[in-house]
Image (tube, rainbow, N blue to C red):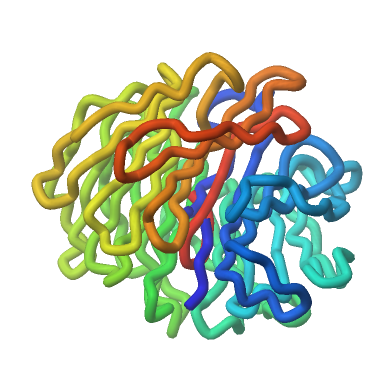
Length: 358
């Protein structure tokens, strides 16, 4: 089974907040990398420097670095890893961004896509054949996972899209049949609502758009793919029943929630609040906030979060100024911070889970 940090997503773009923050993405792998055996899952961290740091989560140390193409393509926006852990895919955000494919054993780039402006979250299909990347102006690019050749481009808005539009995060269900993309409409500089677009991957066609709160930022699905959870900039988490594509609940009490993660059994949500540098823990059985975990001033703004495969630990990335980049580890049983791992660059986003981004 593949684990990826989301999102969905991972969702990745900082367009909804401040472009001054650099993206950090963390991709958690099961310890099945064919090239090298490791005691624990590996976390791939892409920050503001020209390297991607690899953390062994068994001992929470940086074990190696992989060169990135930040000088060519801009800052990383998201990262996803294939089932066997042999390939990592990184999306870059700039006016001439791209998706890059990295061989994790040689630590070298082996292919990159054509260039696109404002790339966001990316996910890999469960069968490993396709890479889906969010394009900021309201579409999803579908790439061949072996070559990164473009297969098609899917509009997430359908006919008559608004003049101003911005897409951000993406998630895929475990069967690979549905994509979920967060977007917002902007009219005369004013946000006019947010949506989650549902796409049929068999036909690459838009099925429906689900209205959610203001500026949907990150999205995550439970392992069954029956529920989707979306963070919105109006301090809420929107709950969607994916069998009906209807909003069933709105969870309040967050402070500018940016990123969201879910544990393996789907009982707990973890929300990274950029407003007060805390993590909200939510019980999905009753959609209530169980507790709030303070992360502290080191590292500044929280923009990303993920859980490990067993659900025993939560990882959140923070940053805001040079030298403050940290990956903070939370014990999911006690909901307390256990350690903080310094990483290079100024950081602000993390992704984890099956098929990345958020």
